[in-house]
Length: 402
Image (cartoon, rainbow, N blue to C red; front, side, top):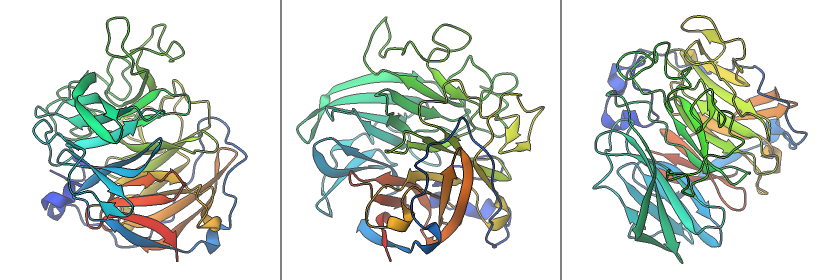
């Protein structure tokens, strides 16, 4: 279901559809640059990025992993499989049985499936983000009994219908530094943010749909909803749907916070030519318009760029062999000092691990780390700050010093 103009999910090549890709030049691309939303922190890269040497160490063979989470008071690594299972890795070993099996409810294939997982800050609740059998987005909550998921406690927190196209489902799910639950939704699929199920001018720019957005909610029920609208959401008082926190996104395939600064990094999958990474300084970003579908990265796409559109801190073209950005994390571990403070991410097609340095909200450095993964879909961060790579080809790997 993948072609350059339609399906842009990181894992679609699993289904043998890379043959329909337009040819790309097999060269390394170092183009990029840009600014950000708000001023950055003073805790950018603290190491010597050029000296960082890394390798990928196998951890567990997981089938088509899509997301990763850790839980307060629990040493396990929780990993979702696209087909609908949540697996755990404990003491370096993959548990034989999943802690949750939603395969009967999840519509999996192409860009659909079990796409996101997060735990409440106190570790008592687990949240999963998936597409159901009809292709619509769902977020469910489960209570945790010790290290066991209480399947009988299942509660639907959010339901968002998706247009007929099977792509651009988003799927990210994460609690922010403020304790609120953030979730990412794609623009509704197809190509160009137009057609059936798309608002005039595109869902990304419409404030009357949740598609093409990052949403922010308190998952506790209130006021007739299964969640609560935070009163400081940018449209809580009107002007748009109150759940919306940021908009103008095509398919935000992973956003994460720097655990030391609270800065937010967003990887937004592009259309035909450009992939982008957006940066939002800690404590800012509410109401930000990232520009899609008027712009793709910093480049005009459809109509005029909004005057308030926030440009990416970094973009790269498909001319170097990339096709779909896979967002990662700012490294805050201890094993690789020269990588500290760098944002590490990749691309599904070329698999190269890349690192960016931000200072004052601007791009201050970048490099490829000299290591390639095998169809990288996502990244994970352990409780110790060390980073993990999730890929269709090799399951779960850890980024270690070489």
